[in-house]
Length: 261
Ligand SMILES: Nc1ncnc2c1ncn2[C@@H]1O[C@H](COP(=O)(O)OP(=O)(O)OP(=O)(O)O)[C@@H](O)[C@H]1O
Image (cartoon, rainbow, N blue to C red):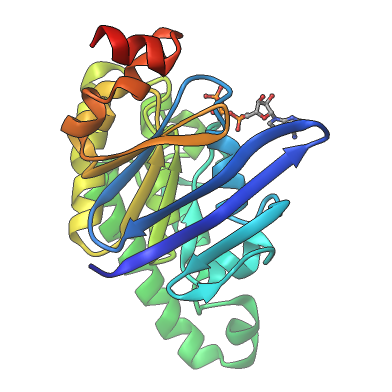
């Protein structure tokens, strides 16, 4: 099985606190992988390390067989590893469509320099960008809102817009940081279907999420962390019945839970 991403012994310390402790796992190119864990387990720190927002204290991060450890976020994004954030970060005054177009320009080949230097091909690229942006709005169910200002969308749709913008870059791997946060059950179910479709189009999905319904319905593989350490890895069925995972969520020591189980 091809692996899109590998973490090898990744550790991140904040002073005396070890937020991520010697974590290793691989993300297959196919499908959806989820990272779960109780509050403060180190999930966000893990995402910040993978996306370059924080350098690891030690260990290696390998994306498509190349070492990206310590590269700045923009360089990592340019290689096709893009992320969304826990809190929505949109250009509020721009239209829904323009937000997605910005996503194409941020990480894509249609950069500002090429637009200045090669006006004819830049115009062609601009048309392609517009087509791609509209396709993504259709994909996320936002096509009818293309000309509206982003700030006018209800929260659930702003989250989908953020997803569409991240997809505009044509990423090889997309990191979704709590994509279902603040969504109702119906929105969360719609999001799950969109995430599955993203994976089917060949973009690897790695997500961090507290909404267990979404995780169990969406992920092919789950990595569970607690106190910065990986405590389990497997299919949703395996994770659901894993004593260490159950113990982490119930707040009981794994050994005690295992003894009872
Ligand atoms: N910049 C920082 N400086 C100091 N400590 C930090 C920093 N970022 C995170 N931590 C600590 O590292 C640990 C892991 O935090 P992290 O936010 O990664 O956990 P999490 O699993 O994402 O939690 P949540 O589910 O609440 O978002 C926590 O103890 C947190 O207080």
